[in-house]
Length: 153
Image (cartoon, rainbow, N blue to C red; front, top):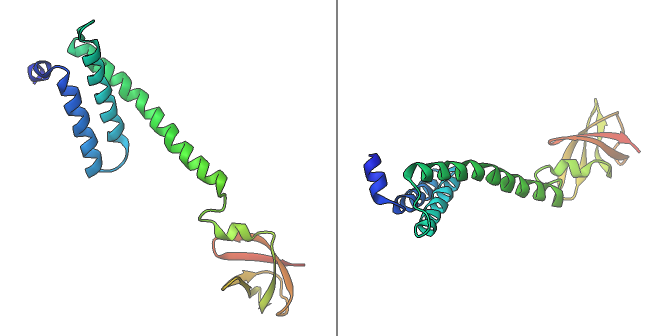
């Protein structure tokens, strides 16, 4: 097997790189993609250095390992950067009820036994808080998913 690997020379890294990237399409996870990139870079480096310095297969394997190890933090940084950007541009994404905290609404149905209803835009929300008659103004003080806690204004 090692003889075949050596016989293919620099081409094997390109083949391995494309195979890893193709496997990423079959099993998405973004991890094989970066190993494929490392293999492609190793192949390109061995082609580029072939006229100056012939790298042994062991040196090529070490270069691939170093590039693969370097690719993982790069991938994590890129993945985290995208998530951080979306959370800073829209902090209430997928947390719609959190955006309601601090806003004041009118009770649609009275709070009796600690439970009532307010209308927010085109939706009725269940609220909990101290008993209050319908038409009272309440302020949302806490949101936990679809459960809103209110206090009198």
